[in-house]
Image (cartoon, rainbow, N blue to C red; front, side, top):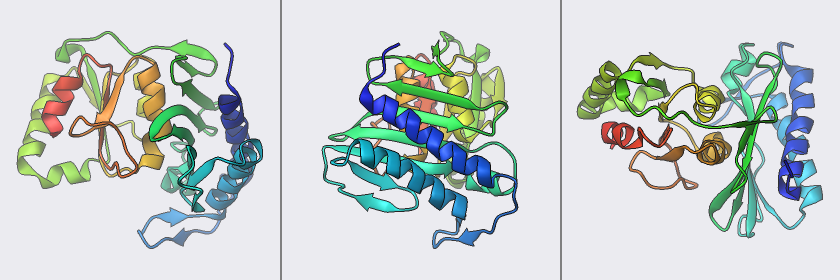
Length: 257
């Protein structure tokens, strides 16, 4: 598989970030609580710095939007979206459900995504580029072809806000009763499972675009569908998403609209 200079740089940046993550993981590092009450560590900051160094050296004219270092050249045609450790709470509690998320947006359209989970098993990296398919550890991946809800697996993530609307929560209960299996894999992992055909629907709220931008490209290039709860495309203000194998997307959307 040929890789564009964009994808090569994104993978190189993810691996540079991985070196920082491995240095700090399970070392009982200190935690700072940000204004939004989420934790941040020196590992988050230094991982983002390592990623940014690779990307800005390769593409000095590109913009950058990072979870820890903020935005620069945000009006550029190309803007990198980076969450260095998506799942910092997992990272600090020393379990491996965290990842590095790197996406590239071109004039408002997400065109590339790399999702790297260095502590998950032997490590797991997924990537995709618009029009080039999706890959997991170098192997092409594809969503499932399941159409019947009673054969489908649904994964829910960050569903706290769904419970605040009684009607929507009731519809979620109906969906849960209709499917074959319900799980809550969460973070990067349920999207990796979805893109590789091992589960079929994901409903998630309380996210931001940096959490899901790269994953949306991966799922879409694997043949799936990835939208906001109202069915619209993702944007910089996205907070709630639905992802599926495409065949089951209308059912999932009907639950959360």
